[in-house]
Image 1 (cartoon, rainbow, N blue to C red):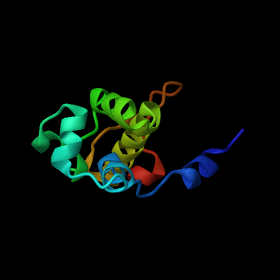
Image 2: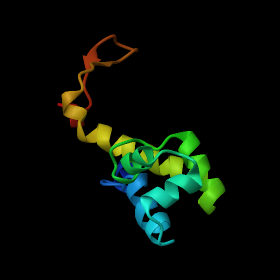
Image 3: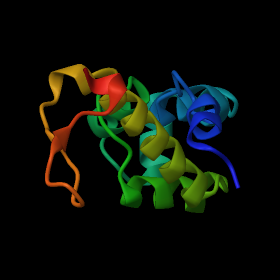
Image 4: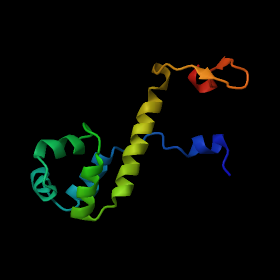
Length: 115
């Protein structure tokens, strides 16, 4: 079993947005334009462009479209989005207010990394 410290060390500090991955590893690798890829995926060009430029999150439906069209695993893409979201949220942790609560004593505490 891994310790919490080992878990933290294993986290990706700066995971890539899935849209940037899809742009380089799928769209560019197949020598497609955004317009051509949008037609294949049956989505609008602006919708796909927003994803590929990391301006929009990857939805489950879009991940499934990429899986059907290009064979890239939907689960992998959704894990990429989740990792990206976690890293972005952790980078804003000091700005997110919440108090810790210890059930046994009723005393409030804050984990050291949030102080």
